[in-house]
Every structure is written in C-alpha cells, then in structure tokens.
Image (cartoon, rainbow, N blue to C red; front, side, top):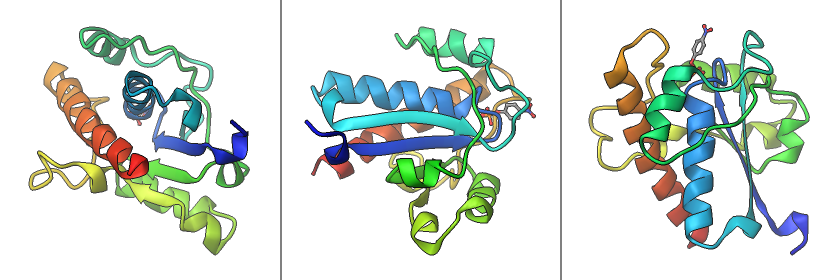
Length: 161
Ligand code: 4NP
C-alpha cells in the first residue's frame, strides 16, 4: 500500500509523556487488533520541549502496562512540518488546541486540528477534554486511560467507516 493512502494521525498533549503517548499506544493497539496496521501512521508529540527524548512518565507506563500496553514512544515537540505530514492532529485539551492553532501555518493546516474529547462517548457528559494527570494520583491516570480508550475506539470506527 502506498504511504499516501494511509491515514496519518498525530496525538498532541502538553509534555508528550502522559496523555498523547498513551493515546498513540491505545490507538495503535486498536488498529493492530483490527488488522488495519498498514492503513495508518500514528505518532504523538508535545507542545513543550521539556521532556524531549524521554520515555512516557513512569506512572503512565505502569497504568498502561496493567492494560497490556507497552509505551515506548520517546517524547518530541510538535514541528511545523507535522501539519504537512499528518491528516489529523488531535489535541487533548483547550490549551493544546489553541497552541496548535497558533502553530498552524495555513487555514488548511488549522483544519486538521481536532479535540480528542470530540470522540469520547461514554463519559462525554462529564468530560469535554482529557484532563492533565501530571499532578494527579493513580485515579487521574486511570481516568485518562478510560477516556482515551473510549475516544480511540470511536476514532477508529469513524476512520474505518
Ligand atoms: P502530558 O502531561 O501533557 O499529558 O504529557 C504533562 C507532562 C509534563 C508536564 C505537564 C503535563 N510538565 O509540566 O512538565
């Protein structure tokens, strides 16, 4: 399959060590379990550069591992050429969305930006964003993984239909 036929999805959060690498891992696992790995390119990135090169936060890796996910992404910062390389650029909260809008080099690029919570189904009445778990306890990480699993499954259904 030619690369241009793939749907290219970039998940973005603030630090690229908690929410977006988890979204990347969850979405990749869904795509692989549905035999669709060849049809997607999946990556994640951060608005900030504080954690560039690092593995996801240990707490996120521990909680994800309990769900069978091995998170091995190395943090990187969003780059201008991401707006060319990806079809969908998915931010986790309103801050990420407004930062991405400010970085978008053109109206076409800006049109690729979407809020992750727009795909959340089960908890949608309570969460209009994916809350930053960095200063939270274990329940914050579990909540993020629940929200991301829900949203990634809906995202796959949308892109697969
Ligand atoms: P993330 O969480 O955006 O989900 O990766 C954060 C990680 C680090 C920081 C903030 C949020 N930080 O300020 O270093």
